[in-house]
Image 1: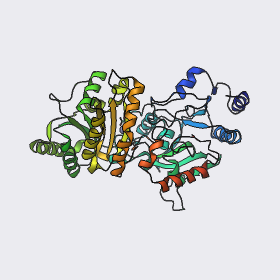
Image 2: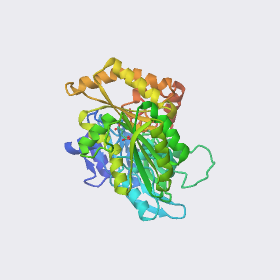
Image 3: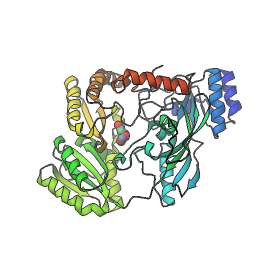
Image 4: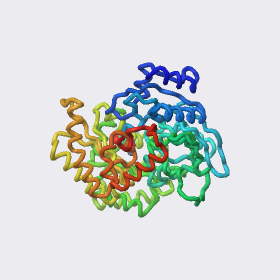
Length: 460
Ligand code: 2HG
Ligand code: ZN
């Protein structure tokens, strides 16, 4: 980074809050996506909104590219800085600024870690129900920027549903207060919703006014061994018809094998099944759930099942699902995060198995995901004998066929992980040319000089 630019950064941020040493550049330059090499010019750590405004002004004046950075748990390269950009880390803007019990709102700086907000709500007799495996390090700003979903979407929706207001610094440097915690506000375009899911391409989310709710009643978790893919929809339908579900997740036997070995967990059932469903529901509905389970066994959809009798047991059943990503990480999987309508999931999964199997019969697919909302995580595991580059290259060769299958079903090439760098060149498989042109128009209004997360979501 040129010295006059570094000096200009140091004029905005006190010493220690502009970093350029190699270790820090390597750490803050990437997210959990493994495919990119970090090469930022510097990392800055704002502590105030004014500093973010000043930085955006400098970026516009000097043509500096800025990459907003939260917990860096993303899986699409949205927070990657691979081209001399300035990474803007929200690690030091991590305070919950206000609690409003009447409106059940918490005003959070962007760097508040999801689990810290969950604990804060819990201490006040309330709950922030959006949850996922990375809650311990993901930050609210990043969750908003990707409209994060996770494991309880069928009951509580996405991050979008819990954001009552946003303070943002647009790419122009304008400071905007969007919606101010209101429930009703029919005054034209809701800019808050444009920023939700914008992946840092329109500006910085600096504060979020988050809705809280009363805590859910005690929950039970069931893990069922399914007799086959065809059983998934009838089982989902039977449970949904009888009780309100908080989660309906699935994973394959291969996924279970990896997570059990990695975390040294116990297998949930004596006999292996091709697929497993993890179902969460209110404890009060336990008898109803057991009745549905019994009927599912009689219909030969389900081979066996287990139900939690304590919170600790529920947590160890959840570990079987939430630990999968980490357990397969050493196998450098080719990852995809796809969604179709729930009713299309089994046929779609079959089709993807076929597409991959036809080109690479030796590749193993580790299936898991949030089947209750149509979101499948496709992870192709790298055979040990294959070099990583060669493996990714082979996988990329099937990406167009894969995404065409998604498009044919009107699905999404990124259900919840965002587009970032990884999916950018495939956006047209999920969005029409007219939509992409309008998206570019929106970007040009909020960020006319293209300083905000350039190259992410939309190609340059
Ligand atoms: C999950 O649901 C995350 O566990 C990660 O979204 C998915 O590892 C993945 O592909
Ligand atoms: Zn997920």
